[in-house]
Image (cartoon, rainbow, N blue to C red):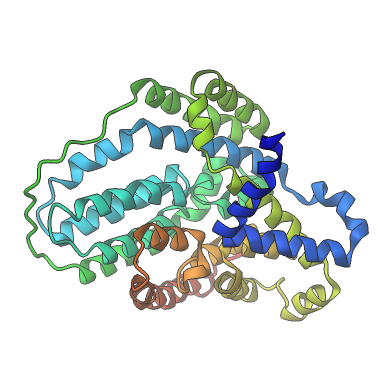
Length: 379
């Protein structure tokens, strides 16, 4: 009985800690009060295949993180760097690479703590490194469906194969990563860094590591075969039987966040005032759809921006390019930005983030516009 009484208190505590979840809950309550009859159909507003795919990916990425393998490998590589520029380029490359196979936020949970740990070994520009890691996971994650939640959603909605999706996103990834490496080269000097402390790498949980590595390609094949529930059953079954402690470490609140996003944004998109506004913009034109995607991401973040725009256009490719570009710029553009600076714990870094991210957005948005429309690539 006491445990049951504690549940509301735990929920309230979680809502106080997670501002995004709180906002989504309050918005859902407000929309429910406005249209009580719609509540019974809320389950039909949720994209359940995307939720199943996200749940499986959370299990697998948490397994890899808890195994210690990625931190172990990154530690040995990073400690062999000799200049700030080389270290920064490596961390940007590792962050971007991890984000292509893990979600962008999980990649940050690996590289940011590693970066903070390296600070004790030498005088490093930690805040600037973390800022560029945030930019890197946003850039790297655009390439694959599992790289970020908006890609996962749009991939399921598009109906194309895994390889076709990657092929469509490859030019965007090249533009973003090429520009980011130039920014990184300019932002970090070739000043030598000397490491003095002998810090041992974290231990490996080999059984968990091998299980996660073997399940990952099987899960991706099932996703590509449009069998997300079967994939979730496979991954979830193995983890529940053999690694139940890892299941407890998964951020299940993230699943609730995305369920609420689907409900809230589809309800908002159905409002007459929104329908009229969108009709006036003319999202059937790719140029306007692109600009709308970049702009709306600056206001409500790129994941809800993708969900909202997908209610008014079937041009998933332009939406994907636009909202991924929109993840740069303002801090709210991508949830990964908020996660990175929260892990850093330095409020002064907010100004530094925008000093780099806003010029980056201005440049890449223009380059992408030129690629899509001046070259006539968009369709």
